[in-house]
Length: 365
Image 1 (cartoon, rainbow, N blue to C red):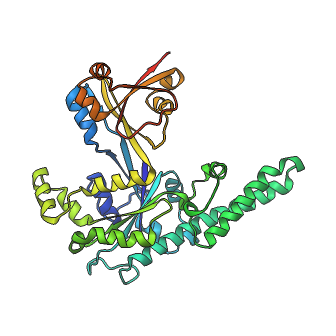
Image 2 (tube, helix red, strand yellow; image 1 turned 45 degrees about the horizontal axis):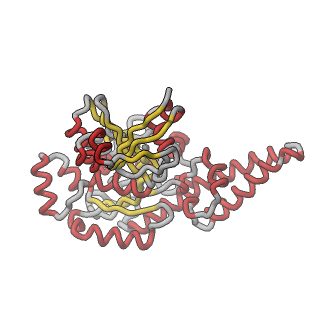
Image 3 (cartoon, rainbow, N blue to C red; image 1 turned 120 degrees about the vertical axis):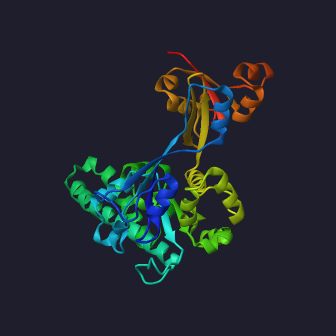
């Protein structure tokens, strides 16, 4: 999974990147103008418990990649004046966007607009992303116009259908409705699949708050959620400055400090959890003597598709899946004992995998 970190200059975006990746990237440093990239193992205490009990030779947590783009890439007007092709291409390939929104105040870090106004900044970013998508739509329409006019009569239908869809999308964007909030049929979404519109991507608004506001983080989230959430967009709040400092402490010291602050969830884990919820993702597990493995799939994934996630041979030769919850497996002690106790279920191809399931795939080669 790839998450693109975006945000206006001096929003604390690179500090957030360091929090999420446990890195030490100096702010304002981009060697090539491209993004910083950090890979994080997705924390999952359930897998840790399974591995501790069954002791496979290795454990494999799912990977999350964060891409931190230069703040200069999102200077006011980037959507209208044209962001670099490198930035737009990298953003288009992400699974979701995390917009770092500046809420903290600091005289040492002046806001480019002169004042701190997070609601204004969210609206500004929305507008710029819409302009970037509009620029793409306009260019695509111009190419389609030539292609449709030069096509034979019997070959124009597909092009005309795409033109009609893009015109409707354009009207929505001009009315300040991001693509993720527009009503499209499954067939229309499939038609747009390869376009990777920026306003179609799920977005987490990550409020970078003051130390003094940590105790009211929930209230700030609720305030922003009332105005900006919905249509595959959600809100989370953290103080990147504090989270960075906590990352330098021992685990025991960090736990004690968090308790004193009333911050019980690690900032990195909070962002991952909210991102998972936003994307509708779940984890299932496979456990054998060689590997305890966490696999990430969209909610609603069938056992057949999940088998293919593990190995293509399993999908091709799928017979059935033996399934039980991770806690049921721990309580039983082993798959063999789970069978004896009648806890293990036999499921077919269309079974919808549940979060926390342990799957044992039976297949023929």
